Length: 115
Image (tube, rainbow, N blue to C red; front, side):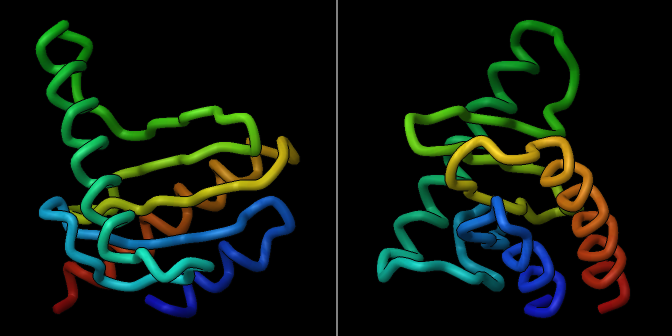
């Protein structure tokens, strides 16, 4: 898992990458902060709330979320029963980041399913 997340953080645009359970507990991560547990819990709660919202308005299941901020983006995507959270600095090539996240999520989901 660390290798997959490290490949994401090797992209110029990507600052942090963390993998959490839907309960907010950290599975693995490459973060530049001491508040890993808080970020994991808040990210899972945000993704869960957005998922509930899209279900309530009959828009189907949530697969990928992008939050644009003043300094970059926060992107969240399902990876099986886990959630991959990636932060970027600046704008950069967000399409490439999303494509690499999808690839990483497929790999992570297969890895978790093999356990």
